[in-house]
Every structure is written in C-alpha cells, then in structure tokens.
Length: 82
Image 1 (tube, rainbow, N blue to C red):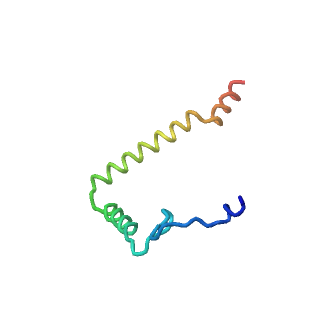
Image 2: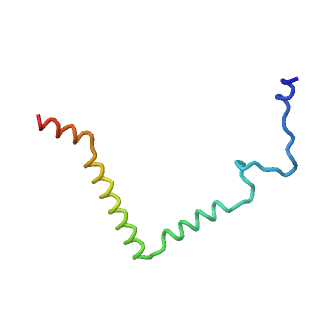
Image 3: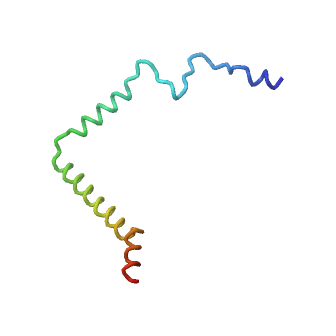
C-alpha cells in the first residue's frame, strides 16, 4: 500500500505553473535587463566619479586590512625576530 501511495503522481489544479518554470510571452526579465543597462549607460559624470571614488576607497580598505592581518607577514616578522 505504501508503494502505491509513493508511486502515484500528484494531481495539480488546471493552470498551475511552478515557480521554476518560465511563463511563455513574459518579457519582465528582458525589460529589467534593458532598464538596468539604460540606467548604467546614462552619462551622469558625477555618479561615475562617486562610483570610482568609493571603489578605490573599498580597495584601499580591503588590501590594507589584508596586509595588516596577513599570516604570511606575521610569519616573516617572527623569523626576523629570531
């Protein structure tokens, strides 16, 4: 009896679409990509300056933290002290 219950295919209501299945004729994904590209390529020079500034700041913090907390650097310090 358990085998029969497990082997049965569940009956789904008519018109049911799983979340993972694409809906035919839907342009929402393509429209979102085009909207993002449109906003990305806008010639707002000030926005680009801010973006580049924050990116450079983030890289300085990232590499500065990595340099100060490097295990390899700490090992070299220990060798020099001996």
